[in-house]
Length: 174
Image (cartoon, rainbow, N blue to C red; front, top):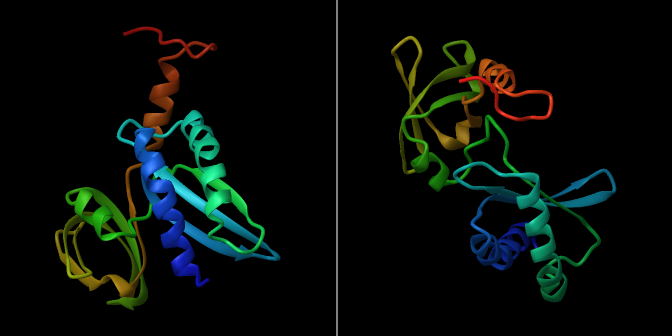
């Protein structure tokens, strides 16, 4: 079975189960690394993914995946969040995050530059439009980007979050 068909079949099996748990499938990959195969299912939800969400989905999908047997060879199943600075890959990701800060890398330099930061202002017919920090507009085909990621991580948020908790993780102050 081709990798793309494998990914599609796995997503067909897993998506309804994830939805029952209040989760959405961000992406599914099936890749060989060294001698081992990895089936990675990335999940998301509005308030953020927890370890318990990953564990719950792992338990919920293991038997249905074994029964459907969409993958001929042995593989390792990994379920996780797409993380901060998640990569926008699907059309739905781009539509959902219009207006969000992004950074992207192009395959070939544009005016001598490959890395850009700005706001995602458009996505139509696989064409990405970003208002760059210098107020110029960058438009390129999705196929010409190595990646487009959300630029939503601020280290100061992490320190502020931790500063408001005691050593047992309880909220203090404010």
